[in-house]
Structures are given as C-alpha cells and as structure tokens.
Amino acid sequence: MTRNVKPAVRFTEGMVREGYTILIPDMNHIHFQILRNVFLQYGYKAEVLYNTSRAVVDEGLKYVHNDTCYPALLVIGQMLDALKSGKYDVHKVALLITQTGGGCRASNYIHLLRRALEQAGFGHVPVVSLNFSGLEKDSGFKWTVPLLRRAMAAVTYGDLLMLLHNQVKPYEVERGASAALTARWIDDLSARFRAGHDFSARAMKRIFGSIVESYAAIPRRDERRVRVGIVGEIYVKYAALGNNGLEQFLYEQGCEVMVPGLLDFCLYCVFDNIYDRVLYGGSWLKNQGIRLVYNYLNGLKIAMNRAVTTHGDFVAPSDFNHIVGLAEGVIGHGCKMGEGWLLTAEMMELIELGYENIICVQPFGCLPNHIIGKGMSRKVKGLKENANIVPIDYDPGATRVNQENRIKLMLEIARERAGIGTN
Image 1 (cartoon, rainbow, N blue to C red):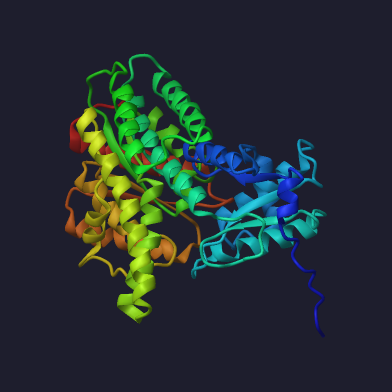
Image 2: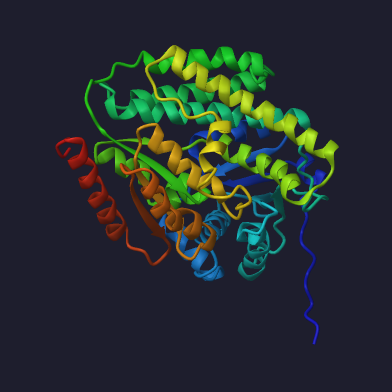
C-alpha cells in the first residue's frame, strides 16, 4: 500500500514580492535582532519570535514526539503557537528553519515541521530552509555573496556585544546600563547596515574599537565573581527558552558568564569541510575556495579579539586556530556530529581563559552531545585538574528546580575553591 504524500509548499520569489512575513524562531537574542534587520534590507519581511509561554511547549508536545529532540519540539511549538495567536495573516506568512545537512537530527526538523503544520491545519504555510548544503534549492530565499557578508558581519558584531555585555553586567554600578548600551548598539548597527556601511572587514575593525570603548566606559564595581562558562548543543546553549533562562539565573547567583560565540560554530562548520579532504580526499580547487572563506571569517574574529584586548579590560576569546589545536590529542577532528569536537575544545578554551566552572547543556537523548559533552568531561577533568563541570539535561519532563539545584551545587564548589562568599 502506497501512502499519498502531499508535495511540500515552497517559499517562492513571488511570495517575497507579495510581502509574506518570514517568522524566525529566536535562538540568540542579540544576534538574531541584527540578522533580522539584514534580511529586511534585502527585501525579506522578517520577524523574530519571542513567544516563550508554556503554550509553546504544549504545542510542541502535541505534534512532535518528546523523544525526538527538545530543540525541534520548542522551535515547532513556538511557530505553531505564533500561527494560532491571531497576530499574523496565516495566508501571507512563511516559517524559517535551519537544515544542517549533516548526520544530526536537525537536518530533518524541516520534515517534522511540515508534518506538524499539516496536522494542525496549516499545511498551506510555506517553510523556508536556511542551509548551505544545497538542500531545497528551489526556495525563494536566496543566499548571495553581499547578503552572506552582511550576515557574517552581524554574527561577529553579535558575538562582541554578547561577550562584553556578559562581562559588564555583573559589575555595573547602574543596573541595566549594559543592557541599554547593547540595545543602542543593535539599533546603531542595523542603521549602518541599512545605509550600506560598516560591514567590510576594514570598517568592522574600526567599529569594534568603538564598541569595546563604550562598554569599558560603563562604571563597574571592583569585586570578585564566580566565572562560569556555558557549552553544549547550539540551541540549548543560546536560547533562554531552551535552557530555562540559564544566563539570567547565573547572573542572579552572582556569576560572570562566558558563552562561546556563534562565529566559532560557523568556523567549525567551514573547518569540517576543509578537514573532510584530509579524511576522504576531494577537489583541491574546492578546498582552496573553502579555505578562503575560513581565512576571511577567522580574520574577523582575530580583529574582534584584538579590539577587546586593546580598547578595554576584558577577557578575549581564543583565536579559532588555537581552539582547533586544543582538540588535538583529546578528541579527533573527524568527530563532527552535532557540535562535534568543537564542544570539547570549547571546554578546554574556557578553562584556559579562567572560566573553569562549566555547565554543559544538552537536550535529553541527544546522543552526539552526550558523547562529546558529558562523555568527554571526564577526559577534560583528567587534563585540567581545576575543571568543575556539570552536565545538565533539558527536556519537557525535566524540572527546573532539579536543574538549578545541580547548578547551585556546582557553584558552591566553585565558591569554596575561589574563597568567595555566597551572594
């Protein structure tokens, strides 16, 4: 018996001209605000979703099996909740979702979403695939070189704002000063992009310095705080919806937080394509093209790091080539399911930078991240005696109290080691 499968509703260029609103699930609040404004500049009417009520989880549980993947459940639930909210014209709306193209289940989220839409009565709503793997080639959303340059500039600026905000917020004399400055820079950068300015590498180096100096000018208290690093599955690591507001919780516990940047994940994906030739062979010419992309992105990160160390008293992240080296002898670079070797290397990096208290977040049942995160923590602890690592699982059935109690226990150990009293 053959099953009749309806063809997927594609997002077309005609829909762009008709002004369809593209709904984007929120993952990283700072980055996605800037990226959304980049999309607007190129004629895509886009909006980031910030609905985070329990209804999001409930909608996800209706249409996505809870053993599938917690990020998929949340993203699909957030989209369905938005469609049912009455806020949007469901006949002039599209949904954007990423496809990694790799072995991670994230490659198949788009199929889960389309099935959920059909079951919920929204089968007519088109889905936009955001990918660099040649999937869904007939989409009306087109990556062009100018759009990619602006998108990578937005990611780099987002990383810098996130880094500085997290290092200023715990110590600011005037509560909210760092958040207000971050919001002003998001508006300012978006205006610069709309005017076609300040996304070239040369211009970005100049703006990096101005950004760092503005955060350095915020009055801060001179006091010691427990430093905590966050690593893990990319969605749960960044999205407050996925990690139950982890960064805010740590701030309330008197901690300073560092979260590795999104540009590192982009570099990791490009590096994996370069390393594939080492493992499997392939076109030399294609490999050289990929190396040019890698060098361009790594150059942006080097410039950002230089600005952090030159213009202010802040901790800069490591050069990506150094992060690649940290994995050597610990985990193979051919390990690239999910966040792959990068997650382990990020733990090593954070410890080097003085953020030896690490929370490794992962969706329950995410096999790649249980191996490269929780599974590698013992290896990392064996190499770094001061490592204080706690793995935390997130899923619809996990209680927030249990998660936070485990984190509090880790923080008590951190305070005892550092000789810091409770907040």
